[in-house]
Length: 191
Image (cartoon, rainbow, N blue to C red; front, side, top):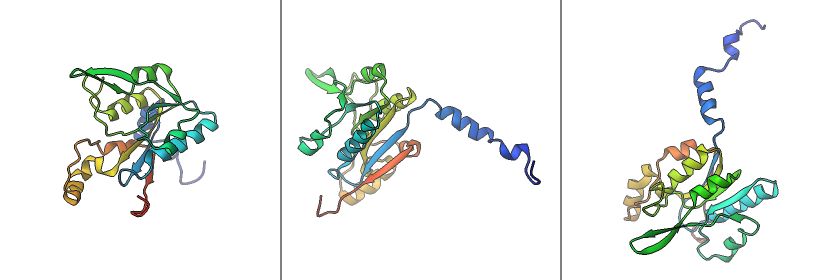
């Protein structure tokens, strides 16, 4: 043993061991964070997913909103899309991400667009970010998208600047829990 070091210096702290145990078996979260709507978060997420698919990773689409953009729709090619679950609400049929189908399929990676989305009543969770937390807890990696104005801590600031309050927010802790955050932005001219 080297002078000046002891066994206790080489051992991880109890806190480090606890953190590692809590993360073991848990999926990894990657957030594509947009500065504004329309900057290309979904496009960037799909490009990254295609790279992972080519590397042999089992990737599925839980929910992706292409907003009718052909170049975004093209990036879905070759990806398995889990059919959405129909839900009745106030006499109309809506569709939401089928959480149970994804959990049963148990891919390595699932794409979940629009993290701040509010689910239709009758869904297991009221918010999509809670669906994502369940997927992560099941050991499934998640790629997701969100705009900065949907972060709880920025809601008041965004409302002051834009004059519009965003009602669909996510807790800031999701950013803390993310294994990776990729900032997606465009110049005002490109936007």
